[in-house]
Amino acid sequence: MTTAETKASTGRVVSTWLGAWLRVEGYWMWYRRYWLSTLYSTGLQPVLFLAAMGLGFGSQVQAGAATGGFSYLEYVAPALLVAGGAQLAVGESSYPVLSGFKWQQSYVAVTASPITPGQVLGSQIIWVGIRLTLAGSIYAVIAALFGSWTSFGVLAVILIGTLTGIACGTPVMALAATTYDEGARFGLVFRFILIPMTLFSGTFFPIAELPVPLRWIAWLSPLWHGNEAARAVSLGTVGPLATLGHLAFLVVLAGVGWALAHKYFYRRLVV
Image 1 (cartoon, rainbow, N blue to C red):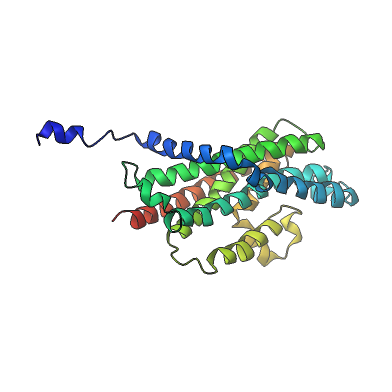
Image 2: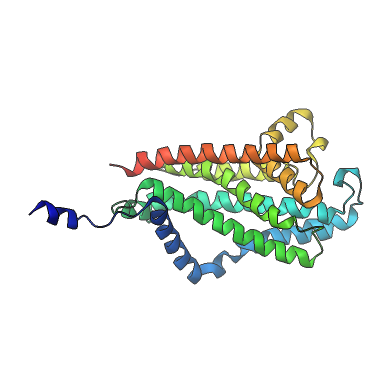
């Protein structure tokens, strides 16, 4: 076989972004068929929380200093969008990612082609970002019917919810890439990290109401930073510099999670 024939048989190596996007296209083709089965986690779950907490419980809460002078519905609506994004991202970054390695082994199959482990990871993050943006948009439209928004800042809240979700999801992807026998790992993450983070990160009440030691834990929570940034653009209860600080924290956390996941994806998929 000549050198020219050898080169012709190696196929076309796609660019980094095109390789990742081809995987995203595959996710989308699957989602078009099964979107109805994910409707609850995509948009209905945070809407039900909004109906229960914002309209139900919130009807008994008077506007005051704790809510920045806004109604409880307006106070809790942006935080519920962000919290819903964090829950969706952690869910999509745990068992589905492990399945790509272990059960369906789709990651193993794809990396037998010119697609690299880095592109596989990138496609997973892009797809989670698309799901988060879609879920946030559905929630925002329904919440608008309840009169939850005071300004067009809700458009920025959707992006902040997506960023917060990715900041929560990429470390879980790294965990999934190092998991061979899942055991109770993900269950512990859901029960002892995700749920307490949702309850005590300023989603339903200001963390100033918490004991001081618990406030330190809340300050380290990505969800608290997402909630504060979302309320800043929606209600204007946080200053510009503080908002930039919250966004910077989320970007750094997402970057660290991405780097760890990138390392472990290559370690597991490159033989």
